Length: 116
Image (cartoon, rainbow, N blue to C red):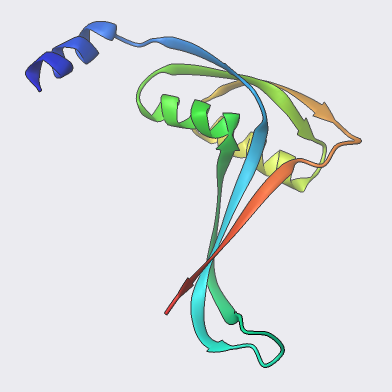
């Protein structure tokens, strides 16, 4: 374990360029207290939601969290999800060279998580 720590200390602050699909990940949590009468699926009453960078944006975000200087190149849409993703990257100090395509919809992956 000491060897690994020494190795990480020697690396210093790496500069990493991430190129790829920039996405927004959305998480919705809630209680799944009953089953729908129309289909055998739980009905979720959401009580909390969160957004995070996804795809290549997640890689850059996580690298920044590890102390690297992360730069991100990719394409996002000129929509609300694209603006949210851009804000999240700014907040965590990921340098980004994002092309904003007004004709494109920013990819957003939504996960719905139910508690029993």
